[in-house]
Length: 95
Image (cartoon, rainbow, N blue to C red):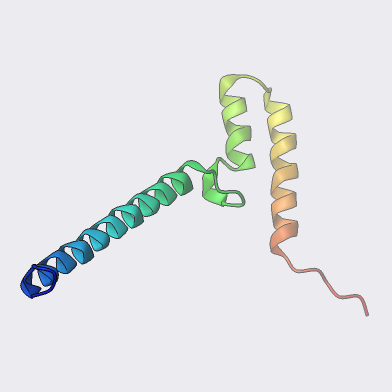
């Protein structure tokens, strides 16, 4: 006995305080995790090709809506296809 309290009471109170601290740390950790997941899902990713339509898809949509005529569509399509083929092929080394 210490100051009139049995020693088993100290163990029970210490265990309760420890569990209380663990529960609060877990709650705070869960809130931080949930906040970071929520914020990361709201921020747009840049450089992701699946984030939006390609240039060819935009051109087709503009033609379908009637914003451009057939001649303009064909000219722009050939320019886009030429640009894409230039990107895909590696440059020829000059000797």
